[in-house]
Length: 325
Image (tube, rainbow, N blue to C red; front, top):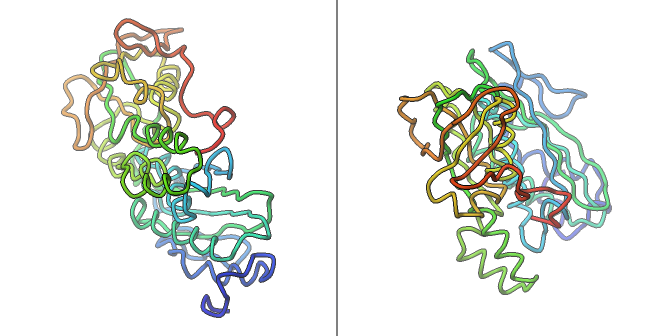
């Protein structure tokens, strides 16, 4: 059944799983390294390096997104961005996505078609060497997206959170706090349709929150430049820098305007890349310095700004605290 043969007003329950998949699959790009894709019990993917980098993430309507703020295309794009960032943070290249979607039977088919277009746009913009090799479709009380992303290291060692050492420069590629400023603006709109439409058209922070475009190519650049540790900033700079500090057994001091910018310190969902580099290393293109590793040893894991320890402060993204993004 072709896309044109299904009216976009019909619901998933009215057309059934087979027709929905027939409409969605042509919209999704195939994985260049896939030798067997959607349509069988499992997919087959070439792994020239012999190792597979793998990560998974979920987005659930309510705690993770709201369809009165986001279009389905936004949601699909953001789902790809958040998953591809985890692969980039290892110094790897995303090669394939497995995408599972569950939604109420009353969901219009057109909503899932727009969601699929968002997936395709996100892959084209952020993971052009990847494609979709399979997934699943089911019913749930609210829209739920679960993505597994696979990546390739191309014979490089993975860049983990554990390699930061005393004296390393702490650097970031991408935005800090922009997504949270957009989130706050959407909350302040209090559901007013006209205000949300205006914010979508005019507010850079709002669109960064709804459809982030992080510089994920900088992951490979950081790996080539010898990054000692790296991770993506999904839950906020302080939260994620504290995770890096604990994994490496170091103390990190953040400097500059960050000391007084709570959006940058505690706002989540920018999906930027946080990395450390040995002293004297010329920071690679796309990265800017934001701090130093100032301590190392057993039990050391603090993150500070001048004058205060921020690693013990609450903040950052937490799906059990936030109502929705």
